[in-house]
Image (cartoon, rainbow, N blue to C red; front, side):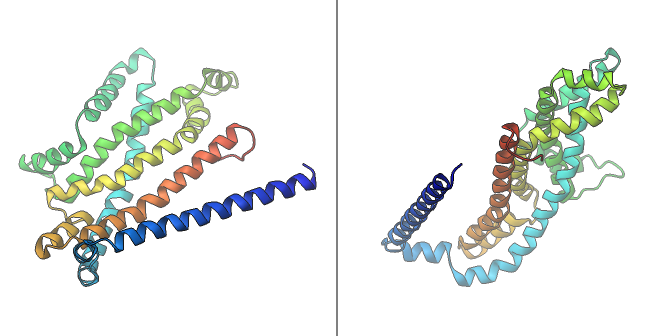
Length: 276
């Protein structure tokens, strides 16, 4: 590209960026003024954005947020392992593996047919009620287990789609080089499959981060439950707004990272980007 054309393209980009920035700022200023000048704003501010209530509930929200993070960060790696195992089992074609394949199919079909909220209730109240020796009755553990069971079924289907997207010629080439079936799966198929499903995987984990709030049904005082307790005690909704802000603080960066991964993957497929 000649220097004149490069300068023209750069000028157009700066102009578009300036216009977009100005229009965005003007838009949010207009919306903000419309809200704060509305007749009901003082009542809304007192009910949803009270600084006094925010200062009071903040320690409880931080403590609940730690539990939310604990649930999310510990469930995610376990889900990945179980889901990958299920996806691999469903892909085994040899007749001897038919029972394992059937179990994997039944697991994914049945679990995906049950709402996550119902699984949380069944695990949290049903299993402890059996009074089985050696099993914990911790609401936190069984809520965590329900999330793992539910999301592993969904993520397994994501992995399976990735595995099936790898062309059979890749396996044939690996076998021609002397790799066994297991080695072909490990070194050839899985790396390509995982790379292709990273964006949908991240989307599932965004949903998982929000669904950790379901364990509040079991009495676990995580972020949402901490906010709800304060709201019911003081009849003010500021705690709920701040709880939403905590969830947003987790979700938005992960969503932007998902977009970045997707864009990088598209660029790579078009031959203009680097490897993931």
